[in-house]
Length: 412
Image (cartoon, rainbow, N blue to C red):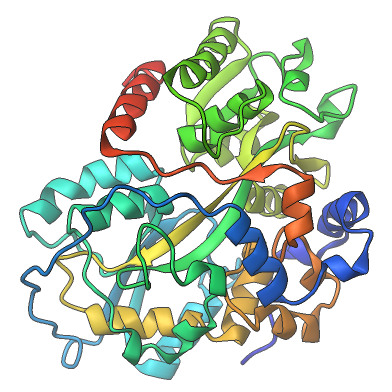
């Protein structure tokens, strides 16, 4: 394995973020533990309840031509794989191509779960090729994909590195035993802002609604993050015991702040462009993106904060579309990214929560300080102390109802 290539998430600016989080919540060195202890315990603490049954049954699979057609086509989210600005390539992916002889293509096609799913679902249901062999969906959407029988089963026996998956993620409610998915990365939703543009430190969602930020706030189109954070700020335990009233109360506040001119836009992954351009200087964001933003803009004033009322934790999952004819090539790629050294290289660049056991130890060999980052290897205490919660699995009926309410807010 070549030396870790990371965009400056390891620079002094990013280290300030890491140190701040550690000093606030991780002053006890014993909290760090190992990846298996910290990461597994953290993710287990936010595991959603079992969703309604109705998973994928046996379906007719297309002929797999992986043996003769050495191709794998991967659709992912923006800023979600190590990238070399000089060569304009993805170092770990190039290493995979060289190692296996499989031509891998990678595209940042996913703006948010709903828009990408709605784009490809009609083709998948019609058993038409979507031109992808791997796509990446968040837990709740992965649940829908499996339930609608739109993903192919994996052959774990052909993926020995899959055993490196954190123990807490091996038997998730939406895919017991991991027959259809493997976690790509996990992460937090919280507040991001440029500290030079405001006169005070932002610690809560209420702090966002200040004249200094009016018209310059973006929030995520994923309601399980944006609405969830607002619900938490209103005193709701989002893991359960709430209903339509609590959801609508949070949505009403968002609509109010939009009408008052505070929120500039509700956006998917492209919200980063508003922050890069300066059109927005604060918002509800995903944790790893702030590290990327600091590096790309060379602005060390960007801060990521878990609000005092709490944050959310989610996981994104690699899956094989039902129409793919390169399933075994896709599994070869998934298996490769579960090598601890490869996972460490990705983690050092994306700064999201790593799902691979052994990656923390690998990262510690080259960057001991980064290997202690709670943004990559959080402890159970960090999750608990910051009230970081997982959004619960919804029934199909509630999913449809809440999505309709949220789509209306966005003007869709």
